[in-house]
Length: 122
Image (cartoon, rainbow, N blue to C red; front, side, top):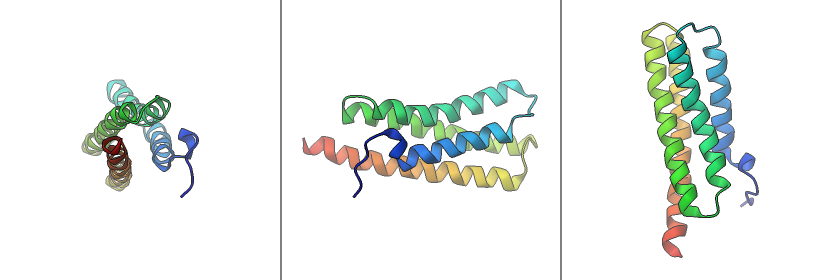
């Protein structure tokens, strides 16, 4: 198993970064600024909470930030339903992004489960 030295090494951070780039691309011309700001903030929160938690001094703190990140990814997923309903993106794009957000949530959940075992064994 490869040792993770920086948050950039985490696959979930890479996935979150990719999703944030999708969000910016998908809504760059969206005139609904409240919507655009909310989904952008949720995407940024997903990515940045992974990084912030990794930079903390304990697994317990990392767990907290991963929990926040997972919630923000769920918010992104939900907002893609709104985007589809408002015709801001096509149904195909919305489905792809929701799938991406779900895979990210699953990955965050797996890391959380691993860290919980580590915390409990200390």
